[in-house]
Amino acid sequence: MNILVTGSAGFIGSHVSKRLMQMNFNVIGIDNCNDYYDVNLKINRLRELKNKNFTFIQTDLSDLASLKEVFELHKPNVVINLAAQAGVRYSLENPHAYIESNINGFINILECCRHQKVNHLIYASSSSVYGANESLPFTVHDNVDHPLSLYAATKKSNELMAHTYSNLYNLPTTGLRFFTVYGPWGRPDMALFKFTKNIIEGNPIDIYNNGNMLRDFTYIDDIVEAISRLVKQPAQANPEWSGRNPDPGTSYAPYRIYNIGNNSPVNLMDFIIAIENKLGIQAEKNFMPLQPGDVPATYADVEDLYRDIDFRPRTSIKEGVGKFIDWYLNYYKIEL
Image: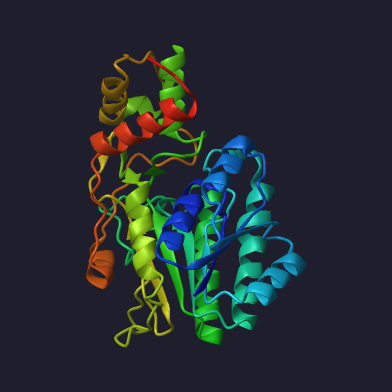
């Protein structure tokens, strides 16, 4: 089986590509390797993927002609779209980057999947789509029509676009709402990476909403395990779906949405304590108000995921933070 992974130089994409190769799939990875964060980190992730079953092509999803060539040459059976312009806060500064990558790029993916008759499209959505929803835990059967950032709006748009193609062209699409993913090879713009770096260097860490935040932190291996199980399980139509009482998480078309979260929200201050304990260093803390676009709490209901693939994310914060910091110290050759 040929599997195309977009964003293969990214945090989640590189981990997913590695697992798929371990499962003896041929992986075609594409990434534009942009400079949103340290390009060397992306290059080093790709070095970890060197294998006879891995083909890398540097291109951009917004380049339709190039994307068509990739699809026509490699004829993927399954596409896993993990490429996107990430980050809630950056979407306030550079909104056009999100439209170019997350909307224009995604329509190109859908068109290529349609014309190449791909068996299954799996794509990254985000817990940010829950926006102003305060009903916890978040379930895929909730309405998500009140996003709080453009990033969230683009991810909600991806779900709507995918449903359209599932309906019109019978393309099985599975959307995955990731909840605060962390782990080795993580992104430098995310909390764990920034906190670890600043604490080691003796710089203060910024703590938003004065620390009154709950996050359903999800370890990367749990994300990868869920995706690897979904690869061979294309989305199915829900025969009980009714337009009189429409269920947002399923459809009469081959379309599904899943949360992938730890189902166990952690207070931000407890997360920071886990970092401090692993490093043996106490952080200097700079308490700040809630940032525009942020939500105070995330909490994933994963019952649909468990029902369909018999898996629940389960890595503890202590274990996950410990593995990240071990990787960080080794990668940057730091001795404490």
